[in-house]
Amino acid sequence: MPRQLAGKVAMRAVIQRVLRAEVKISTETVGKIDKGLLVYLSVAKADTEKDAEFIAEKLVNLRIFQDQAGKMNLSLLDVGGQLLLVSNFTLHGDCRKGRRPGFDAAAEPALAQQLYERVVQLTTEQGLTVERGIFGEYMEVSSINDGPVTFLLDSTRLF
Image (cartoon, rainbow, N blue to C red; front, top):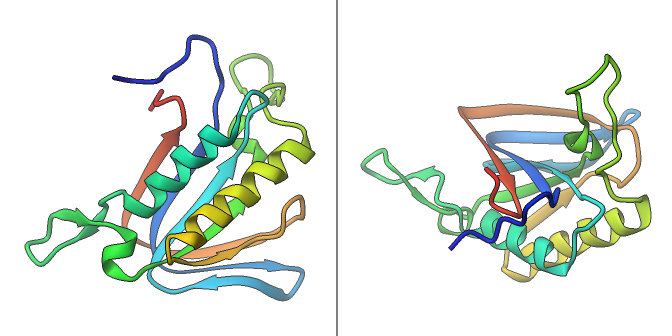
């Protein structure tokens, strides 16, 4: 049964299957992975620990890697993949009106950082190698996509 809540804007993630990915601040590499998932994560104002738990569980167990038959049937854990988690509040940008996005749905930095760190913690506790960007910093992210395979995830199961 979907947990979607009417009108609730929730934690969002863009998940990209990658052969490798890296995040830099200035010229310094702060996070780098080989085969795995590059995930951009945005926290909404009303998000709670439950939203972080939902996203973390999905990242660890979503079966989006190919098995020997070429079917998406394996999880990040199954393939021994790595996770690069990058905070990105612009996923809550609302572009429906005007020419400048509105960010009213995005969480304030203190809550956003707390729940971002919680997703890092929960995925690390599952045995994953987790790299990350630096919260609130301007980052340069590069990746070599695998497929490409890209999914959108919303903690209220909107998509």
